[in-house]
Length: 218
Ligand code: MG
Image (cartoon, rainbow, N blue to C red; front, side, top):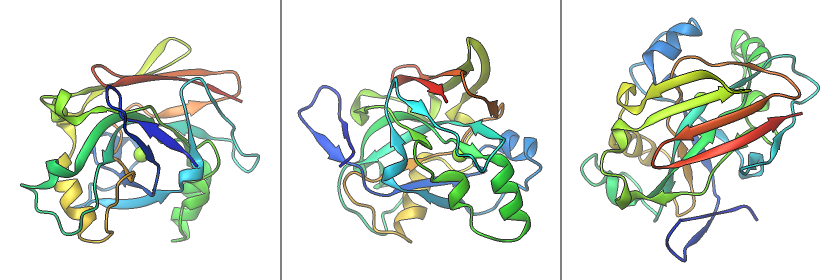
């Protein structure tokens, strides 16, 4: 069972489904040559893809192009369905840092054929994920900064204020499709600057006030 702590509480959550947004930052959609969608584009990662701080991403042998995507992660605190934008905040227990590891070559081939992308996004180790800080400790989650460096070089440096669909809108949209349960995780998309890592690289992902992950690549 994979769990994450809600820091400064005695609560620990079993990780459920991980619902992820693609193309939620316009500049990142452009850098991959994708259109900016009207509605959120969703996909999922299995809980078995989660690793923690100081763990290693293992690039599967069917890919030569593994990319990092730093993302703000939301921890769902209680079950909900069809939540309004106004009520959405009541269901977020905490904020964390995630890296949405993506096999870009595999994803590109599958996208071109109109096939699902799971093997590019849900493989073992594809979801480095921190513990969570209490949602109530973050006054302005939509203004958090997201940073990722590789071997000390800053590669991504963005702000959650550039999201196309904001945090309450995301919860409302997803909860109208999938019942959200305590321990579910939502990855809210990545800002521009994504790129490739290779074996031996060290990624540091940080969202100030929220957390930090140091992950090696093998
Ligand atoms: Mg992503």
